[in-house]
Amino acid sequence: MTSGGGTDGGWLRALPADGGPAPVLTRDDQVAYGPRRLSDLVHRRPPGVTGHQWTTALRESYDLVVCAAGTGLPTVAVEIGPPPAAGSPAQRVARLKDAVAAAVGLPVLRIGSPTLRPADHGPGIVAYVLDAHAYTNRWAGEPGVTGFRDIVGRLPDGRTGPVNDLGALTRSTAVEAYVARRLSDPIVRGLHVRWSGGPAEGWSWVEVRPGAVLVERVTVAEQRFTCGVDPARLAEDLAALAVGERLRTLDSSEPPLTSRDDLRSGIRGLAARRAELVDGFAFDHLCVD
Image (cartoon, rainbow, N blue to C red; front, side, top):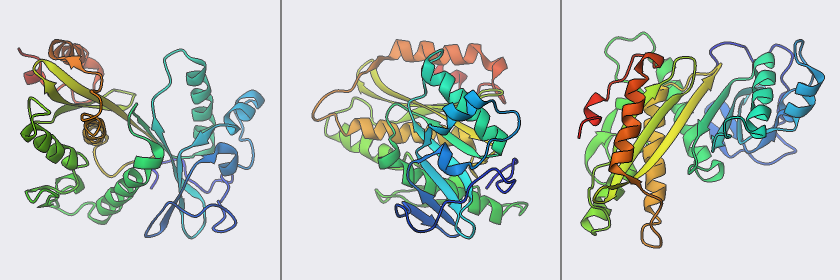
């Protein structure tokens, strides 16, 4: 599961298979548990970590922790939720936690979203990532193998398409909402980028009223971990999933909307920073009027 760092270097603590809450997910040789503090995962302070960093970070939690079923050692800790505001105390604490996780070689997957929630979406997201990772490892190096995200099959609405598109249900929901005249356009659109030295970022949106769109943005940060799919495409799919969550409230209340002009301005802002992006910016067609 990891892409470096190791999980058996003497710093990490194995989670017990019994005597605690039941796993929220089991996938082959991986077991996922609900929230755990960093103090549950690390049993001694590594060199290079100050006492202040150590005591502060140990109080912090991860939303889900995946462990090897055979050893109980953590293979990846997962966070899902709104990213802390820039310059805030929460951001400083998050950096301390990152420093300790890096020092002990704990792989971390961080998903930044104001809409996706650990309890409701976390197990499904983790299951998807574990399946993607297992599939990619199984077929690594084999010529002509379809990537996990691009496997085609029967979709929930009966159409044929990519069965591992996490936004598939949202796309179906948007069509139904359009037919019911609750949306002005049935198409769920999106884009994805990957920042050099930073997270991947995905946007997804749908037009609710003429000129007014519902927009979701999601970031995916892999630290000493690989998802098994392109993290930028995963971020866009998760943003589409988040749009679907927001569409569920259309009958009771309209979610906050963004003008089409403001959305286009934001996309142009990404395009203007293409030098900071891995592989540049591939969505110039979205910048035009």
